[in-house]
Length: 114
Ligand code: SF4
Image (cartoon, rainbow, N blue to C red; front, side):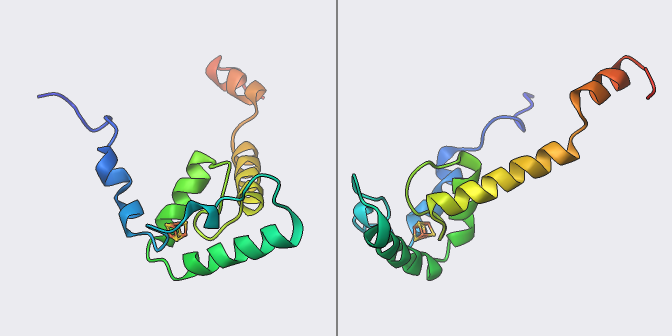
C-alpha cells in the first residue's frame, strides 16, 4: 500500500475555515486598501476590518495562514500587513538564532569538533 502521509492534505480541508469567516460575503475593499490610501483613512479602514476579525470564530486559523503564507496585502486574522511583517521578521530571527551556523553544520557533518 502506498505511503500517503507526506501528500498535501486536500485543499477543501485546509481552507475549510474560510467558509466560516465573519468576513465571508463582505466587500473585500473593507480588508484590502484601495490604491493610494494612506494615513488616517487607512488606519480607520484597518480598525474597522479588525473589529470584524475580533468577532470571528476562525481568527486563529486565519492568522496562522496569513503568517505562514506571508500574505502581502490586507487585514488577515486581525493583523495588518505591518503587524504581520513584525511577527514574521521576529519568527525568522528566532529561527536563525536557534539554528546552527553554517560553519557548525559543516563541522558536525564532517565529524570535526570545535
Ligand atoms: S479573522 Fe478576519 S480576515 Fe480572517 S476570516 Fe475572520 S473576519 Fe475574515
